[in-house]
Length: 507
Ligand code: SF4
Image (tube, rainbow, N blue to C red; front, side, top):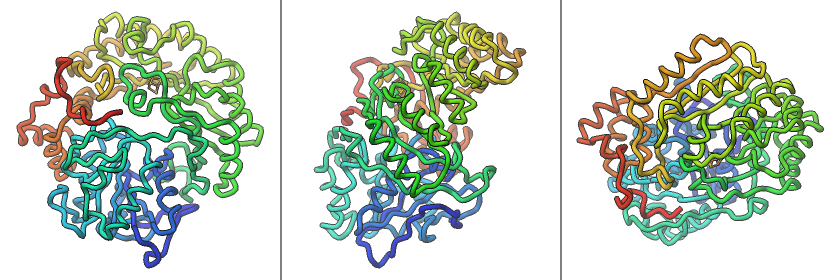
């Protein structure tokens, strides 16, 4: 890959380390460098004197398939570690191996090939679709696992020498053994390391390499969530919520800005809206003349003070995710809030100058009827009626995609026809109203995503073909046909006593 100029890039001498790690994000640089995961793993691996870590992304243009730091091919590394955030990136994982001439299937690799590792929310939930292609999976947080894995590799001299021994490390799933694996977690976030010298691309604001939140210092305030909404993978696989203390977060920011001199802080954490010091933390940031962003808020968390702080912190847009538009559907998904709270939150935000609001809704829920669907339009209008202007309420309306380990793992993925009909109804109600921007997810893609989420090892063959054929719905259709996979068997309703592909994974 042609080097992207970056602050805090780490380049180690290849002759002075024992273990070389290729950290792979199976999508483009802009996506990978927006969150914290790549920066955190990069810091954790490179913190060891005996290890170097270099990054790989899917090329944005024609940069090539080489490491950012020293332009090396994937094949020269001892470990190839993938962090996978979305099921849609599965074909990209295999594409990265293909482009580097690494044998795709685990059983086809030789002792001198790299050890292929994968982690991240989707594979923690269900590693099986990629099980024939990945040597070992990390089930849980990476921090407790990195040292034992590297130490074992050093012990045997070659990374692939005794793959079965990795199963002795808590949190490692070895697909060739199908060992029962219990998730490992960092219990105390205050004691966990946090990257201070973060990589920031030295490019213009309009560059395709610029992360989504711009040049920002990313701080993980909270990990996991206690709410366990019935559809949510994170709520089930990153449970429980763990918070950093206010002292710790503020000291990370103060120290981090010395190494990463930017003027924006990106606050992250699945349940950051429940952080008990959120307002004080925002106050601390704006009092230092800095901007900040928060990915998502709950209506309950939006107070006059917080809205004022958001404005002073440079935020022009807020996001809330009611997911259901009626009390009935919100009860079904386990997300309890009432309409008044949502409308009131919108009113507070607008009164403090937050002029753009994004709201997430889901359709195709079990027990939902068409009244619940039309209610999305009704609730959105009530929200906009508090005074939002043209194109200022952004609705993201998505089909339910059942996830492993959740209460919806047995339910049927809504049909394409049903979702299309729902979207038509909502658009009929709101289509001519200039205040709304409606963005939807193609239900045909949602069905493939559900298959990747709920699939077993057989699905890997289709992913393999799609990786070779360069993606797209047509490729998926052809691949499923060629592999004899009937999608309905995976995304239809399942009996409660049916064994699931992820039964060995104890989250
Ligand atoms: S949807 Fe949000 S609040 Fe619910 S479990 Fe997931 S992260 Fe938590």
